[in-house]
Length: 344
Image 1 (cartoon, rainbow, N blue to C red):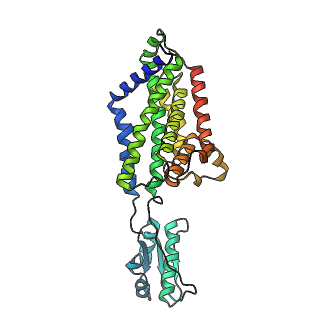
Image 2 (cartoon, helix red, strand yellow; image 1 turned 180 degrees about the horizontal axis):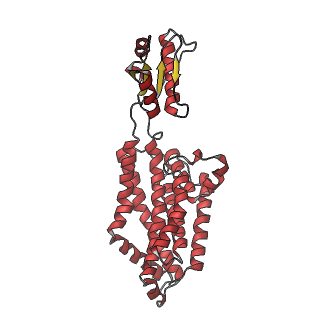
Image 3 (cartoon, rainbow, N blue to C red; image 1 turned 90 degrees about the vertical axis):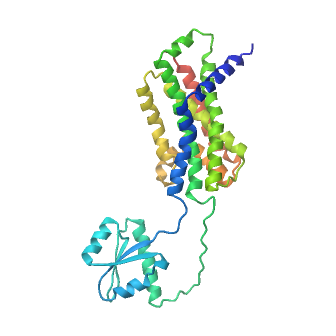
C-alpha cells in the first residue's frame, strides 16, 4: 500500500461529507452569486446623476433657472432663503444659488457632490452669459467592460469567498470535531497527523475549482465580464489562495476547543482583510504609512493578483512577488499548525 493511500481516502471521505452538507452548497456557491447580483445591480451603469440645485427666489432667479436646463443634468427648484438653508443642511440639494448683481454659491466643501455642483453650475451660468471658450473641446464618454465597478468587484468577491471558505470550512470543521470528541477517536488509528490535516486542506482546494468557475461564468453571462488573462493562471491563483487560507484556518483551530473561541479568533484574523484588502474598494485609498502592512496581507496579494489577471491579462511570472508572499503565508501557517496541533 502506498503511503499516499490513507491521504487519498481521507480526501475522498471529506469530499463526501461536504456534499452532504446543504449549508456548504449555499455559502460556497449561492451566497457569492447573490452578493454579486445585489452589488452589481446597485452599482450598475446608469445615466449620470442629476445635480440638485436650489435657487433662492429673488430678482434674476428665472434667468438662473433657464440657464440650468434638465437636458444639462440639472434638477432645479426655486425656494425661499430659509428653505434653501434647510435643504442644503439635509442634503436635499447640492448647491444653493442666490441671484443678484453677482451670484452667491452656498455649498458644503466637504461633500464631493457639492463641489462638483458648484463647478458645473458656474460653468453653465457663464456660458449662458455669453462666455466663449478659447479652446474647442470634444467629449467622448467611455463605459465598457473592464472599467466598471462590477469588473472590479467580482475578483474581490472571489478572493473573499476563498478566504471565508478556507478559514471557516477548515477551522470550524476541526473545532467542531474536537468539541464532539471525534478527534480523540482518530488518535487510536494508524493515521498520520500530516495526512489528516493535509486531506482537510486538499478537499478545500478541490472545492475552489467549482466556486471559481461558477462565479466567473455568472459574471460573464450576466454582467458581460471580459476575462483578459489565462484561465489556467486564474485557477492556479485560486488554488494557491485556498491553500493559504486553509493553512490559516488550521492554525487558528489547531488548539482551539470551543466554537465561540474559534469564531472570535477567525473574525479577528479576517476582519483586517475584509476592510483593507480591496474586496469592495481599492486598498490604495489607505494612507501611505499603512500601505506596507496592507500589501503584506495575504488577501491583498490574492485580490491584486486575481484582478491583474482577469482585468489586465497579467501572467504568473509577472506576479512572482505576490505569489511568493502567499506561499510564505500558506507554508508557515501549515507548518506551525502541524507542529502544535493537538487531538483533544
